Length: 284
Image (cartoon, rainbow, N blue to C red; front, side, top):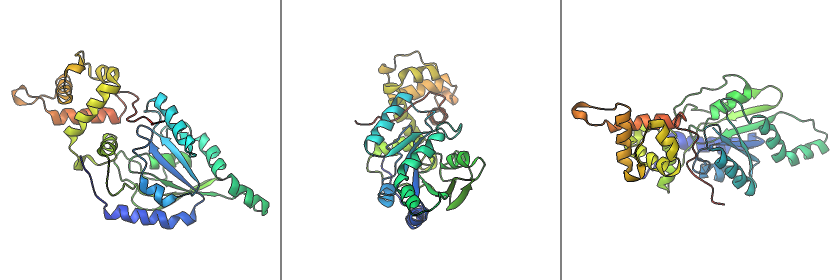
């Protein structure tokens, strides 16, 4: 699975982020807690450089809590201020103020010594498509300030959002990078819907995902799809067929509609109906 592209809107977003850095005090980078490394765009690292930054592991409510703790430790060991958050419920939001105060402490102190009063903090929110930037901003602002959807690419232009008393937020469109050197990264992003299904082989995705779940979360996989078989005796494709039979994905002649079964598996994973799952572990 080799994916290579750099659509015009992503090149435009790259320029937008670069040009807007001088307008903000801190960059808040959102990643998906289910794939914290794979959902970090290396292009953003290059653009942001040493600017003050807070890393938000979003969607931590649907990722493996044991892995969450490992990832926070991993990034903090690299000197990156990191918090866990669930933008849907707002859990972890209070930790954002603390993290931002920490990374901007020197700046605040310089301003204090100059007799300057604390002003509104200007924040840029960045991340790849579908990591929950709009939900994060809406939760922070306490209103539906941006469009929210379950499709990647909802935000299409730069937006400033004011938050009473504390922040001014610059929202930016999600940006992927020109080429996935590691096919595993592309697959993980695609599992979560960060790459549009229309350009993916959905059946191939489901086969790979089932293989990962069989090896790492077998009990969740079996419980969700009522599988009683010894899955070690089956190939990934065969497990998708088993699930299709259990869910009634049958076409004429008694054959399993593997495309329908594949979409069902991906939908269940994305909605966390299979369980709280993380797709990668940090190498510590």
